[in-house]
Length: 323
Ligand code: RAM
Image 1: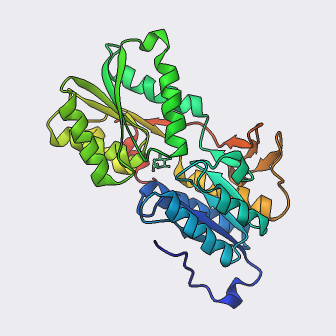
Image 2: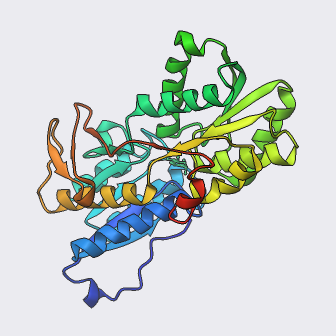
Image 3: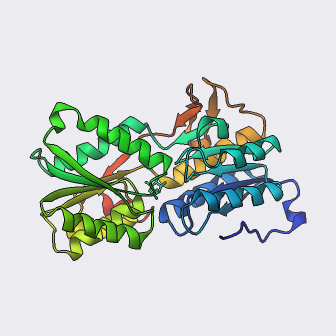
């Protein structure tokens, strides 16, 4: 575990609103970018200190320990990308009883354990997008596909996988056959090994969809290393900075993502609104995300930031410089 740390003295902290961004795990480029966005929001708001923290591996247990330690440090708000929809609830409820404003972003906590959840985009759309990308890459000819996900408990990946399965029932995708779903736990080495086993287990596999930035880059590498470029295609959700090489090598034709900097910025900005009493967390409420505009809470107290963006060889290099 890596404890939340801050080099700011108590005096410097006085008067500052302390917002902790607690991510699934440290060492993930997606969350590094979200942290940069959180820092941007803190700077813009002026009276915010951002504490960035997360466990070394993406487990609910690691996050519970960190929630308890952040409550003991009396932070004002915690913005969490959750490793489990329900396991964190007792800890976050306790935090909220003590006055800490808890919201989730990216990967949600169930309604009982947070004031709101910020989805990067519409869940159904994210599912459809990934099926559509592999279908187009395979030129509508279909074939066997597999999913390489993050952890088996991740709220966001599980929601996207469920949405992909709904999409696969549409007649235009009936020639795509989902043969397996495996979990690389958002660890590069495990994701790489899981990708290799898929390639071995299904010699006629045509596509791997990885709805995780860690998984997609591991799968992109596995296909190149196995000299399967042109035979197996990888798609899913990736960071242009991590995927440009695989697009160039040909193991990835297209992939999608939203801007993780914007997501971290928006989540931090939203947490600030709760600390300031400007947001309450009621269905239908409109809350400011600063430069990202307003968002509206639905009946499940969820909101969405924007639309995913698609990358391919025409634009990946340009965005690789940003995130
Ligand atoms: C990984 C994480 C994160 C997810 C992205 C797409 O970095 O699992 O939660 O949103 O992939």
